[in-house]
Length: 204
Ligand code: HEM
Ligand code: HEM
Image (cartoon, rainbow, N blue to C red; front, side, top):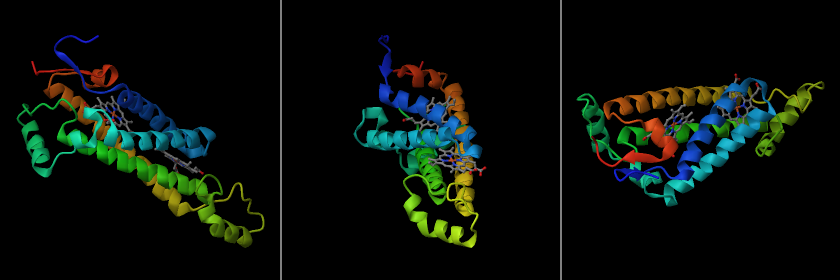
């Protein structure tokens, strides 16, 4: 249980969401080159997590809601500036910069998984395969030896998919950097909070 000065900020759903996303993201990233079953299923897992998180951002507990951590221009700029003083305002939930980073991560993950589904579809598999029937059949008409199963698919889509996968990875590095910097200037362990769900009520 938690002590009197602690408050539950991240509910169990947010915490399971976060650490499952970390696991599945790295699994997807590292299996991208071989179009393996693991790649596709970890990707589907991420889509499921995103659907859940967007719904939870609308109807979830206090600190999980988008309305709790999407701040306007003023508060965001104010926070960014005050970081330089090393004494920025402390937020119990996500701070304004952290909040915008979460939105960026979610959008980039949607682009990555959507383009992944498209690459997979262009190879004749998955839910978007139907969209590419014409592309695949004309590729097969061009080349009699062209196997439907090992079709080259849409190379442009593959480039897009690779771009977004790498862009998300870049955001993840910035995200982790932000978490570490915030932890240092507020002298609190944010990573531990994402495990236990607890934060100190007041800044000490
Ligand atoms: C956040 C989730 C995902 C990440 C980080 C990711 C990452 C990657 C990476 C890094 C590559 C290698 C790109 C290259 O070098 O050409 C790749 C390829 C690919 N991905 Fe994903 N991916 C994700 C989700 C998905 C999903 C949901 C699907 C479809 C169900 C998918 C299907 C594919 C396919 C078919 C390839 C091409 C493999 C090949 O033939 O070389 N990916 N992905
Ligand atoms: C091992 C690496 C990681 C660490 C240590 C870490 C740590 C954290 C921490 C401490 C928070 C809470 C920030 C706060 O207190 O405001 C957070 C939130 C978040 N992180 Fe990470 N993170 C990691 C990797 C990732 C990855 C790989 C992704 C996505 C691909 C990700 C996406 C998110 C999202 C979406 C949130 C918002 C949580 C929510 O409100 O649902 N993180 N992370």
